[in-house]
Image (cartoon, rainbow, N blue to C red; front, side):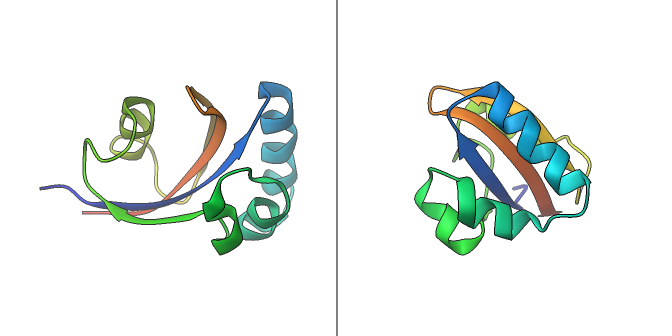
Length: 92
């Protein structure tokens, strides 16, 4: 079965998500931004979600994580929890 590792940042608004994405693309460290802004408990670990397989996260995550480009910031991705920036760090 496919496995992936990823990290994410969860915020309340699409506008905030876009602003944080611009900061990261401008050179800020993803983990630092996650620690400062993510409302998910994973933010304390720089947004690290660890390793997971298809179906272990919400469908919107799976759609990005199991098809998107590695080591690129994806998003905003809207889920029932809010707006996410996702970075796929590995996939096998």
